[in-house]
Image (tube, rainbow, N blue to C red; front, top):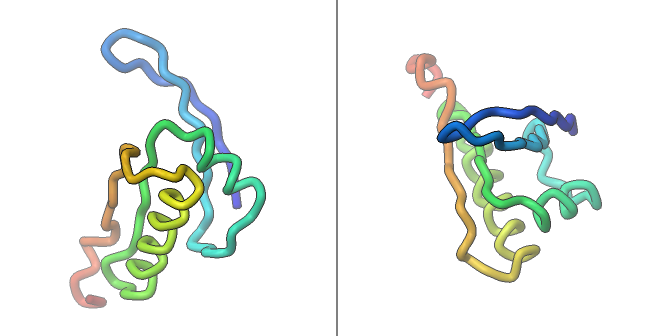
Length: 88
């Protein structure tokens, strides 16, 4: 896992992003749980060329809901590698 922090501006206001790149690892680590508890929203990415990555994305979603004890959390699912049509 890799963690990154950056500041961006949204509607002329500073916003701080903490990004946890799990590189597709579905194991549930203490660091990941901490990010899930404190996150105000989540982006889950998967490869459209890899069905298993989509299934892992579903597992991440369920882990977030489990840790947060709610389904009321902003979450975006992103399919990447759409340019690799020959591998679908």
